Image (cartoon, rainbow, N blue to C red; front, side):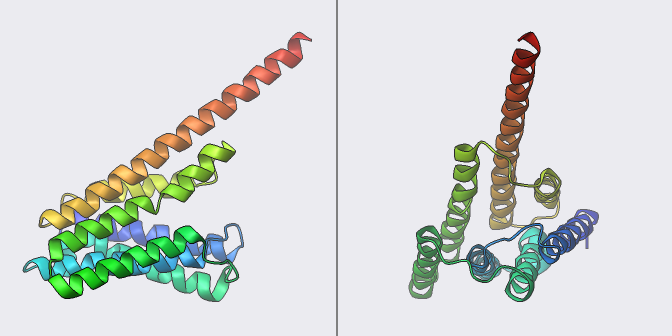
Length: 204
């Protein structure tokens, strides 16, 4: 196992522990539906990657460790977290899209196209978070967690083997990076607004 792969495993394990701890302490209440979707999508991503070539799970270390991460988080949400959250139309739409992709895969055995389709759906899955942050103009995410996720995705590129492993990592880098930029922008605008109000109050 390469050094970069070991680093990916260590960071993803740390993210997993922290996330589960936050759930346990009721500091966050992630939706079960979202994590169920991620388990299915990440599993299909890894399965199609392995089927597309003579690869091993460790050749796509990010996808493999992500599958462990999302599975553990989903189990933790199921037993310790908020289970009453309903499936939104968006959740159902994502799950339906994944099912269609699986059906496509079953009939065509086109591993590459199926994998790319799943990556596209996983990009779309970020939309509700982005939309909520844009509407509320409030950063509801952890910089530490998302920085770690972005870093681990970038590091995994050094040990990724095959086009699909690289696509998975690049997709993760792009999504987490854009979300971090949005978080930074919201923080900047909020601090600017606070500073403006403070300045106006002091001048009165």
